Each structure stands twice: as C-alpha cells, then as structure tokens.
Amino acid sequence: MSIKRVYPREEFCMGCRLCEVACITVHSESGDTIKAYKKEFPREPSRIWFEEKKPECFSFMCRHCDEPDCLEACISGAITKDPETSIVTIDEDICVGCWSCIMACPYGALKKKVRKDNKMVSTKCDLCIGRGINPACVQACPNRALVFK
Amino acid sequence: MITIIGNSVAAIGAIEAIRKVDKEIPITVISKEPYIAYGKPVISDFLKGKVKEEKLLSYRRQGFYEKNNVKLILNEEIVSIEPEKKKVIAKSGNEYTYKKLLIATGGVPFIPPFKGKDLKNVYTFTTLDDAKKLLEVSKNIKKAVIIGGGLIGLKAAEGLHAQGVKVSIIELMDRILSLAFDKVSGSIVENRMTDVGIDIYTEASTEEILDDGTGSVRGIRLKGGREIEGDIVVVAIGVVPNAPFAKSAGIEMNRGILVDEHMETNIKDIYAAGDVAEAKQFLYEQKMLLPIWPDAYKQGRVAGYNMVGVERIYEGGLSMNSIELFGISTISAGVHTPQNPQGYEFLIDLNEKQYRYRKIALKDNKVVGFIFVGDIDRAGIFVGLIRDKVDVSTFKDKLLKKDFGFIELPYELRQERFWKRFLEVKDAACIERICPQYTPEYTLSDSEVIDGE
Image 1 (cartoon, rainbow over the protein chains, first blue to last red):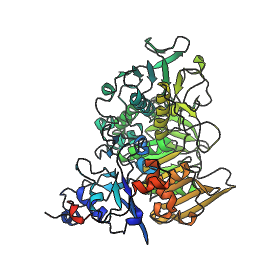
Image 2 (image 1 turned 180 degrees about the vertical axis):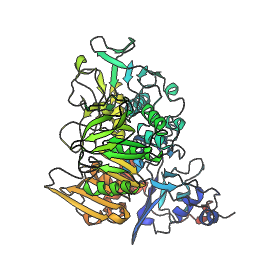
Image 3 (image 1 turned 90 degrees about the vertical axis):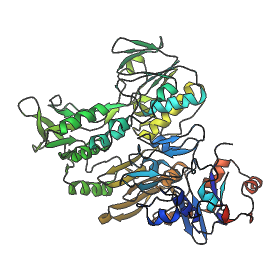
C-alpha cells in the first residue's frame, strides 16, 4: 500500500466544517483557533474544499498522487514530493503564483493564498506534516466522515 | 550509459524517472547553457524584478545532480550525432558516447528574415541570458517594440513594463494570444493591457526593423508604411524545435523530431522529448508540436522509463496554459475555439466589467476545451473531465455554476475520484472493509487542535 490519504465518507458528513476550523488552526501562526480567526491577517485559508448541496456534502483535499500533475506543471520547482513520506508540498518562498498547478490538478485540490507579505502563492493539504498523529481535519471530525487510510 | 542533450524540464523528467528504477546507470547531461536547470517560464518574473537569480535556479534543490548521480556538462553545444558509432559531437570538438540518447534540446526563437534583424538592440526572450540582457538594457531605454503577441511576447511586455519601459506590441492575428485565447478573452486581456499603458497593434505585419543610422534600432515599420518607435526590438514570434543535427543523423523530422508513443525516434536507442519533439496528441489524431511545460515533463518521464527498459506509453499531449497578465489570471485547455465549430456545443458566461469569462466547449457531451478568465478556481477539474472523457450530459447545466465542484458530479463518479481509483477497489465487499460503518465511540475530546490554551 502506498501513501495514506484522507478519504471523505460523504454519507457521514453533516457539513459542520470543523475540519476547516482545524485546518486553519493547525496551519496558523499561533496554532490557536481564536487567534487564527481574529488576529492573524490575511487569514490562512483552509486547505480543504468543502462542498455542499443539501443534504449532500463532503470535504475533499489533495490526493498526494504517485505522479502528481501539479508537480509536473510547476514551473518554479516549488512543488516537491518527499521520497520517504510521499507527501506533496509547496515551498511558498519558491512559488511564483503562476497557477499552473491549479490548471493541472484534476482534483482541483489547490487554492490561491495571500501571504502576510502580500505575495500570492498556491496552497494545499500537506497532511499536517510533522504533526505526528492523524491530520487535524481527521481528528476534528465529530462524525468520522474523514478517514486517514 | 544514458546521454541527455538539453537540461530543462524534459531532461529533469527523464532523470527522475530513470533514478526511480535504476540508481546505478551512468547519466550524462549536456547543456549549451551555463546554468543548472531553471524554470524557463519564470524568466518573466526575473525581468519584472520579482524573482532573483538564486530562486530561479532552485527549480531543483541544491545537490540535485550529485544526489541523482548525474554528470552535468555545461556550456557545451552538440552539433552532430553519429548513430552508427553511438556518439554525439560538440562544437568544441569533444565527443560523448551513449547507449541510449535523449534529445531534449527544446526550442529556439524563430526570427523571420526581416531587414534589420541583425541590428544592435534586437533581442529574443527565451533564456535566462536573454532576460539578463533585457534587464540590463531596460535601465537605459524609454521605449520597446515587441514583435509577436503570444505568450513570450506578452510576458516580455509585462517585464519591461514593470521596469518602466513604454511597450508596443505588434501582432499579426486579430487578437493577442491567438493560440490560448478566443476573441473575447483576448480582448479582455487586451483592454487591461491598454489600460496600463501598453500599445497593442493587431492585424499588423512587421516589414522592417529600422536603423537609427548608427547600426542600432530606432523602431519598426509595418506593412502599409506606419512606423512605430522603439529603442529596442524584441522578436517573440514563436519558437521552433532546436534540432539542426537531426537530419544529417537520419532522424525523421516533420516540424519537430517525430517520436512514437515510447518517445523513441525512428532510430533505435535515440529518444526525444519536450519542445523539440513532435508526439501523439490526446484530442487529435495526428502528431503535433506542443511546446508546453507540463507535457515536456511527462514526455521526459516516458522516455526515461523506456530508456531503462520499463515500458511506459505516452497518453498524448493536451494543450493547456495558465497565464497571468497584469493581475488577470487565465487558464485555457484543449480545443476551445475549433476552426470548424460544427458538432461542438459552447457554454459561455461573460462579465467583461469584472474581467470574468468562462467558456466551455463540448463535443458529444464531453468537455473538450475551456477558457477561464478572472476566476480560475478548480480549472483542473475540467482538465480531468477532458482527460477522463466524462459524459457530462447529466450535469451539463451545472458546468458554468460559480463554485462548480465535485458535488455537481453524480455520486458514483465522485466516489471513483475520491478514493476508488487510489485504493484499487471495485467490488462492494472491499468498499465495506475500507469504509466501515460509523463507529460512535469516537469523541471530540480526541481532538487537540480545537482546544484553547
């Protein structure tokens, strides 16, 4: 089995969006929910795409593909895949905001992000790299609608 | 032993593929440029002053060649190939042998035989050295004329404009970016560029580059006699495959080096990939040049695997461009503006004031192309719909919806995308195992992340 991914079980998603709260928090500067939402600007975007058409809803994010289209399309070399962990990440300092990754990813996983220094870069799920345990979204989901397998 | 001529994205794709399966086989990369691999399209950001040279040269991290056990030879231009002796010969006289050869020499700017093309201050814009020269000269000039309103021309325009140079663009067709755009999207971007002070001349053909009397340029003259002033001229009409050594070596060429679906040429053990190659297309029957970054990587990878005996088939190139100009994001892909529109269906949403435009082309209820201007979010999903040849008849009316996403796809289709294709499960029993019933023992207190301080 290759890399573990976060899979949505949409039958169990009730649209509470706590996954997004967790994602924003864990990627914020302070790591604190209130500070992340009220004090840090521009606010870190959630790296999750939450979609809803009631009653259907789900959260979806990067698949960390074996041969990532985003990485191949990346003109600056900001996107890399770690040979050991297989996690695909973006180095924001190298990213030039050309949006080739947004064009290439068939999962629509990437988002534009405005950094504190006003630089526009691409962002996406990094599986909470280095966090040790489950990704924050999986852990925050009260309904186990996200599984890490 | 593998020899690669050229050191850009196709070469990198090949190296990364080879090293996945073979850590030992010697790889030699020969480049005529003096730099390690860099993001060629990023030279426009370099000219703008947004990206420094050090960042530009970070396309692959420091130590890439050493870690991958690649011998890199710079400043060496290959001028001929001798397939019988399995060697390549450089301008310097040096010779290099190979067991398998990859030609990944890219393209070179096409310069028509204008009168005055050899004058001082006539430039091109495809390499880092070109960008350095333009950056240097931009400090001492007021006006520039750019011949060609394609991607390279517009990116040069953006860079020079950022350096305070007054830019005029000369375009032969009725719109800028005629390959990536249709008339509507072309005019949206054109209006924006005119707003910031760039002069655009469409349906204009350059006749001569004008001499100021000292051997340097003073502008250009269009057919019909009109003259446009410029202290420099940038020729950005397009690039052509860079393979002057191919014909004499017996390598079959059309406009580019013809390759099969393994990226191999007509000569055994010689492969080609990237802008120099003419390969199979995804949406068309015939082979075509497709000088875009992502496909150069894919072609390089296919060539790399096949060169070390792991069979990989190139699925065919799909044209796509992500172009941001003066703050307007655009993404286009596939066949969005067919020459003969019969049999196609077009979905269009236009808001010119907000610089927003979405056009989706369908054929037989399948997405075959699109243009997004302004709002480019999740454009890749549409590329996925093209590649997977998804029948969209059940959700066709949703394709133009703002925030279009997987929720509009039928349940089965999105389940397939979300995890089935990754977990390689097809039958119900497997799905049951991977997606077990809701387990209520889980509680919110497991979560540390939403705890306060």
